[in-house]
Length: 159
Ligand SMILES: Cc1cc2nc3c(=O)[nH]c(=O)nc-3n(C[C@H](O)[C@H](O)[C@H](O)COP(=O)(O)O)c2cc1C
Image (cartoon, rainbow, N blue to C red; front, side, top):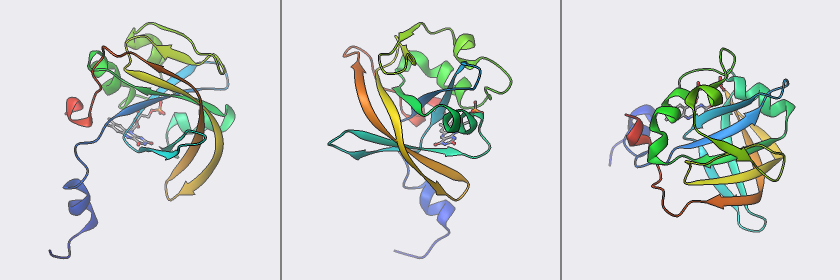
């Protein structure tokens, strides 16, 4: 055991990590998917997830305006979409449309449930806390969706 720089210790302890996608909605009603590594389950009763979104992201503006998000666990069929949603901004394009994955309306606030995903949790934002250059949004899960047949993606699938 030796003392080390944070970046090196972090790089060597973070894998394997799952990747998720939060789908948020902008002020014009356009849905915007953002790829995220920083998420966690934070409560069992009621079920809750937290996601951490950087202040420079378009999704940060969106979730401040519309207080819901769908937390999507992308399947291996969605690797190209997850890459796109994690590298381009919804400021410049309709990321959901371009990726071409079909979806249907969820039950909570009609946010998209992507048919090719492994799972989706429909969340309502309950609280938020600033964490340096990101903000953590905590969402209560209202509805859950799962496709037993699909295989979940990890961050390594994107490398
Ligand atoms: C594997 C991966 C994980 C990422 N994790 C996060 C994250 O946890 N939080 C975050 O704010 N951005 C994260 N990003 C970066 C955003 O997905 C990226 O900046 C995106 O283009 C922002 O889109 P937007 O401007 O439409 O919100 C990640 C990107 C990748 C590829």
